[in-house]
Image (cartoon, rainbow, N blue to C red; front, side, top):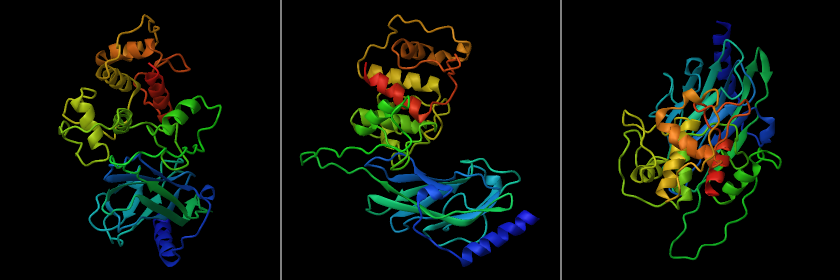
Length: 357
């Protein structure tokens, strides 16, 4: 009952004192991140995360309603969240709807929420002509076990890559700035820096790559699509859960048309599913076949990893090839971890090694 009353008070306080200040991002427990986008993207997926533990609180998220239409909003823990936003979007809680351009999230936890587990995921349709979009999250009504947690505003910009006019000579690309979380000495530094400089991979924001975050199936295919020069194919409609105008639609169509991905038995692809290590190996293996590369193992025998029995039959040949070619290695604990999810850093390193073949 006390927490319910606190939520009501928080909502009232926020409604009476809505302030957006110019605060440094590092002083805020909120962070804003975006899925990778391409020049042809028609949708954006934006995540707002609380990077400090909270037990309850309220924050607001702002976007440009003239350029973006909110399609859906969700929370990592929907049982403890109340989400309000403009009418028509999926995932909103029952109750009053907010004007377009605003989303309000109220949270109540029985125990302290872990950093990164609290927040929003918003999916937008790009309706305007803008190539740069600014998002802002602000609060000031967050609590950890009854103690106030300061929550100044934080903003982030998402830029769509420029569309090159084929009738004009291309201009040299500007040197790509480094990511704050990819530093010299990191085991993945050279690989991430190289691939990002070539435009194959992007960060989750201008300054962050998020190396330890897991990779989505749709994102892996999008990266390979870029590596191959984004060659357009006729819409195949191969998978029931991938619309041709979705953020990875063209990439998935390209991959399906060229036998690089096959999807699940139920006819879906699962673009937002995480990629396991033994899923990534066959995708790279089939891409190698598509490019006419040698896809046989080179004689280096995969060790008898203690979890080798977890390798699925459909992944065995590809994993043996990936290991023999030095694309994939075991974990530090001596396992192969075929069912473990590949991180963004691991995926970058494996892709970089593959491109050296």
